[in-house]
Amino acid sequence: MALLIPRDLYKEINEPAMPVEAAAMVSANRSGDRGGAGPEAMDFFDIPGIPAPNTPNPETLFHAMEENLGPYCHARGIKEQTDKWKLTGVEGSQWLIARVAEETDLETLDRAAMILSEIGEPAMGPVINWLNSHIDDELQCALLQAVAWMADPLVERHRDEMTRIIEDKLQSSCADVREKAIAAALRLPKNSALRILQDAYKREAHEQLKGIIEGACSDLTSE
Image (cartoon, rainbow, N blue to C red):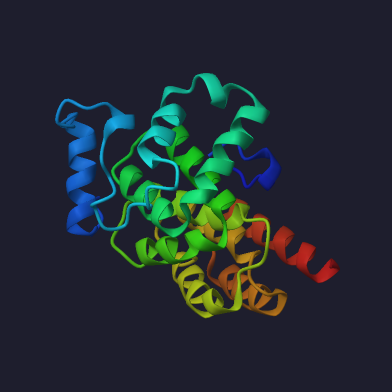
């Protein structure tokens, strides 16, 4: 089981119901069916949920991330890439989640979580929509980790729904999902976080997770 880690040390990280357009795009990406064009030449702009032409092409950004070369080899390069991802906003967030929805490589999922956390509030709508879908434990973990890594508390319009989701994930049969839900709970207002973590502690049978909850509650009460 992966241990909870601070946001600034983010280098640790079946089939969802996705929109028809996104599913077709993922299928094309996987099969290499790009009509003879490379990532930079692909025309995403007629597909719903894809950023407008004045924003970076998410496929190009993802390709750079997937290659694990060049801009992703050093901190400055990572910042340059995440700054570009931020420009894609809601549409880029939806594209990225759809792209990794069937991903099994944990490092790729971890990087996607980091990117979503850097996009921040604009990513919350897509994150919430996917967490409300039937998705693999691995993707649940990545999306909850993205919330946990976000720099700021959740804006008001997302709090109630995210609170409900975190409460639900804290009852998951998967210990890894519960662990990530504990971390995500810390982005909620203090009183809400304490309430749902204390309730989770009463149900939790996993001793390591009980210890993590105790530590999280202790941190909250000492603030």
